Image 1 (tube, one colour):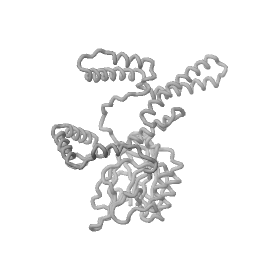
Image 2: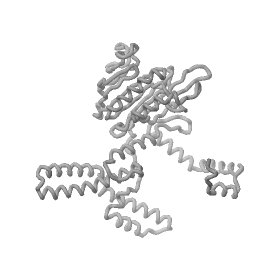
Image 3: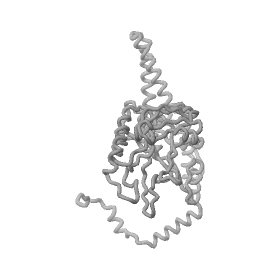
Length: 404
């Protein structure tokens, strides 16, 4: 094993699970100038290590899986993951070949997916509170390469826990084509972001709580603008946006940092007061810091509540960590990992994805795009359509008897 690793990855370090299985089914290798890995535990189907990112100076757990082929043999893997999950309070990445589909559409060809087949895997993921990384590339990660009746299935996975979304940078998973193997390689990489992007203007609810807000809006809306009515509206909105940006920069730019600073200042004031409870000056100082933190923490929670869009949760309590988690989860769900251009080619880097989107909308809004839309509408006119009476029937209120 050592000779093979040295030939393939000269200068790298590695760990295996040879102590748990004679074949050494799992190998984890890493470059020591990028990562440090501490072995935590191993089984015949997995290796778990504590990884230190040398560049970011962040720690996370990683579990690399190579599951057995039968449902009965995999049960020990699910039990092992569930038992570990309770003790892991740091970011955790779980990835590898699980030899199991998770949902009904994770396999085409062969036998249909049954509930009995996936229930153990699903319960394990739920118990461990893991969520799949958004992924691009190949939809199915394994195929048997057998004749005309091939079986394609998704049995390779990458999951993270909530702590990962709270504390780690965004990562992307791409399943590459398999080559001569029967499995698609999985590449997990950090999202570099492709440089700074221009931020779109969004109204922030906390602005309305500032005493100058009404005056800023009134002054912006009362400015005299010549030209036709619609132009006046657009121009005033642009002027108002500029004024609101200035208000935000002056009073809300560091709203989250200020809340944390006020929390620390309140803790210090309370510690001093507890050491000298009868000191009137310390009592007054603690009262001032209490009200200051109460106000800044309320603004911070309002700000994060709007960003997370979790409007069903009431303000109150220490929900800031939860809001951050929701925001990051939405970013994961909404991430565009890959996109096809008009030639049908997949692209994954941020600059190319941006160009594809711009090209698409430029084409759609161009003369050629409008010509295609006109042709499509002409086609629809020749189709069978509902008359006015039939259309009205569709929007009539339904009765209880009609609901089955």
